Amino acid sequence: MEIRTTARHFELTDNLRKFAEEEIKRLEKYYDHIIDCQLTMSVEKSRQTAELTVKVYGTKLMAKSKAYDMYVAIEQVITKMEGQIKKYKSKLRDKKGVKKSPPKKRPVLQEETEEEQE
Image (cartoon, helix red, strand yellow):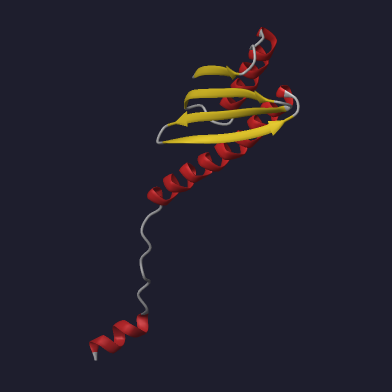
């Protein structure tokens, strides 16, 4: 998994970068096949925004969070992304389950076969 972080309108510190990368790595326990993660952090006046884009096979998942503290915004966006990944994974599991189930056959009743013979 490749992790890219971008800071807009402020200087990104090493502590904040490490914290963000550790939080993003937590997503791997929910889904192993994450290809790419892009975290964009921006500051406007007192609002701090964290936007996370996760690329998985077949789609991109996005989450956005605003808070007054960047650490809180990162935690919130990771929590939102966990929910999206769980939902995506369950959809994949449901699709696989449908393909593996055998086609349903209509049971043949004894009465129908007797009527057809007469």
